[in-house]
Amino acid sequence: GAGVSQSPRYKVAKRGQDVALRCDPISGHVSLFWYQQALGQGPEFLTYFQNEAQLDKSGLPSDRFFAERPEGSVSTLKIQRTQQEDSAVYLCASSIPGHSFKETQYFGPGTRLLVL
Amino acid sequence: AQTVTQSQPEMSVQEAETVTLSCTYDTSENNYYLFWYKQPPSRQMILVIRQEAYKQQNATENRFSVNFQKAAKSFSLKISDSQLGDTAMYFCAFTDNAGNMLTFGGGTRLMVKP
Image (tube, rainbow over all chains, first blue to last red; front, side, top):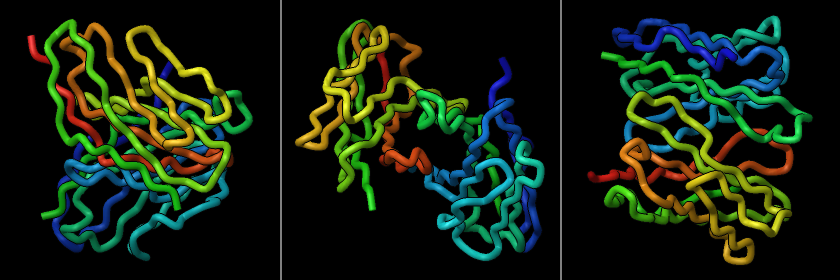
């Protein structure tokens, strides 16, 4: 079956531009997560949705970062007024709470963002 | 807060040999879940193996097995009969019983040499 998909795969932005990153989770997966992965490091949690509700946004680094999942399926991570330190790979993952392996998250290929 | 530490930034192994990747973690929780994820150069994170803390038996998945030492808070990954396709970054990860965010270690870059 189809896995988690993300678009675009690569994005180059000039400093100060706004960007929008899209995530399509696995069909039926209620939980959706965003992570930020800097070069050579492990992913770091940004935010978490259960259906359309954003239950945890403690990892968002600043108020320039905003995520939404209005219909409980596709999610968009928006970064306003991008800065060079925003350059990273943004990973999306989904999972099924209540499933016997609810804690297992399935990841998309990521969006590599480069801010010049 | 939970932390995950991978003390080996890079490792290499000859094809067909066995290699062990280390992971330690810190938590005050009694029940939690541990994972090893593989991230090949294409960057798609793939689940390798998972372990539930309340299960004493070590998880195994074909050539991959773990050595889970709960008291020591250690969760190492053993790869037997290493294959060229095992070359990747390997991340150890933790989540608590709520099953929410994953906390990752810094990763170990594994190179399998022919």
